[in-house]
Length: 274
Image 1: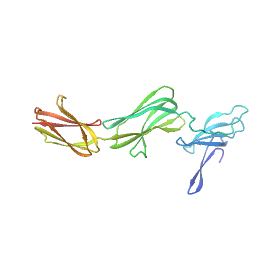
Image 2 (image 1 turned 60 degrees about the horizontal axis):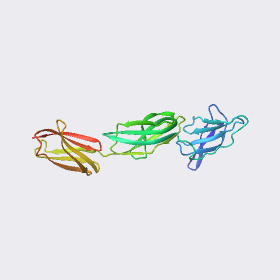
Image 3 (image 1 turned 90 degrees about the vertical axis):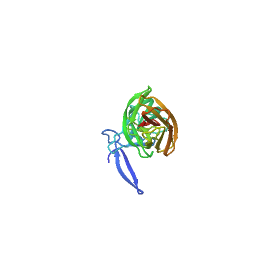
Image 4 (image 1 turned 30 degrees about the vertical axis):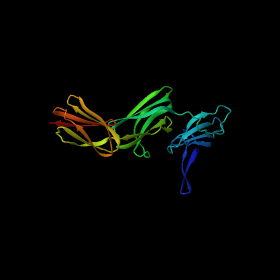
């Protein structure tokens, strides 16, 4: 099989050979003193090669059978590496996040994050899930590579899910190593619709029916054609149908708009007083 690191997989209590990971481009030498960092995805293998002189410390990320090891260090003349150990917590993070937050507006979510430093950072992939288990990539933002300055990033999801959405950042460095940010939770508590406004045309009383998917506060406003707000109230909606009664005896006849604002989600409907 030539030099390299063999990968074996245990299937139904039987160890089965998968493939060999090479120790460098064009290299046929083997490796020894293997240690593994399981905190990365995929796991990172650290080893020393078996050259009789000027051997190397290498890193391998097992992404496929064709992946090539990256040389971390080469022994100087008349010296040789004979082992390697890995101590969790002593390696510098490729990216240090200072903030990561989400701002919801209508049916979009703006994800904003900042980094205090970056090391070999290729890009950020934005991942989204409806169950906090199965994530899909919905976009990516280019990283700075190497930086010691505070950098700000943003990405907008134009398709907010009904209910709860989960967001996280997958950071990918130039060697293919990955790490993840914390997970943000965004709940879309928009009312399904203003189901009925009775009567329309109306006279001295206006009954607004709002159907909401969850318990949530809502701002109800009555506005004229010039944009003047004649009535405004914050109502705590219950899940299901809600009825809001407005006394309109003091209003002049004409065209008005009822505006319902629920956590930034706005629904507007035209009504007429006669």
